[in-house]
Amino acid sequence: MPIGDPGGGEFIYTEEGLPESVFMAVVPCSDIGLALSFYNGLLGMDVLYRKDGEAAVRRGTATLLLRKSGVVGVDTGVYLGVANPYDLRRRLSDEGVAFVRDPMRSPLGVCTSFKDHDGNVMHAIEMNAEVRPES
Image (tube, rainbow, N blue to C red; front, side, top):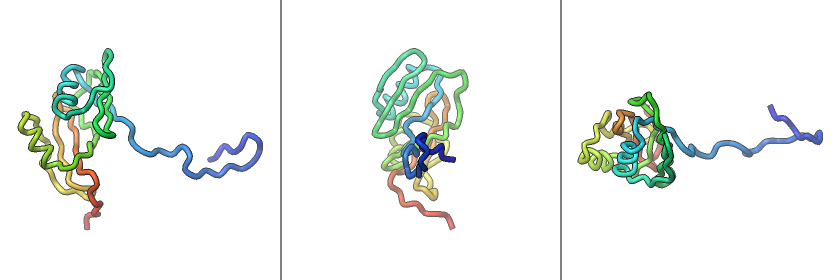
């Protein structure tokens, strides 16, 4: 319900204040150094900053906040956009990364799932895929 204009007039909302994107997602980790080895070293994400208990990494528009946690090994629900999930799988498999799901077509594009160093499940999906509802 709109609060309205403090001066007494009516205010009509258009698109002010509505979300435009997912800015960042948090990934729990047991050790920041190991997390950076994975996300920076293997996934090529740039380190934006590092301090006690957390670090932020980014590649393209994907930003992750790596936060020390006692609870790891979760399905993060994070989908990273990649040009080709098959290429990602080939590259990470060569580095010994465990995959939970081979690349497969979904209504939103080809996606795959893998585990980071803590066993957190990360997902990757092809960017710019044509959305095809399943029939």
